[in-house]
Image (cartoon, rainbow, N blue to C red; front, side, top):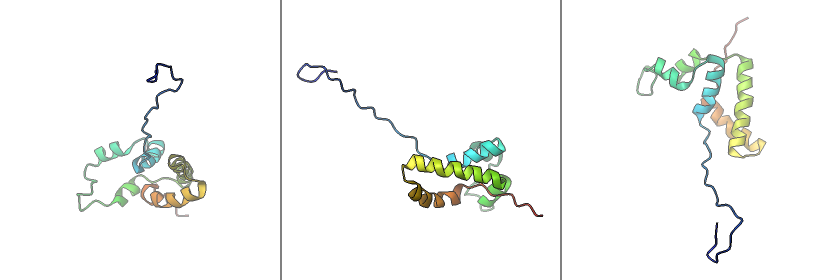
Length: 115
């Protein structure tokens, strides 16, 4: 690379890279793929009536159909909260505060076992 004065510059041109955004779908797909061998795209192909336009659909139907054990939930939560922290660049305490709201929309339902 040459400057206007004809001297070579050792500086490399800055790269513009877009960082992938972490979505709620990414967090949900992690546990769907790991524990149910599927993903959101496949789930909605299987259940095309599960849309917000359908007055009979409630997201509880989705979460009841794809439940996880307490251990699976805990594994996902540890992964998801750490992934959220890394993507946001927040310190641990701030990430925990922010993640609690995302958790409500993305956490798997836990299978309740009556003893």
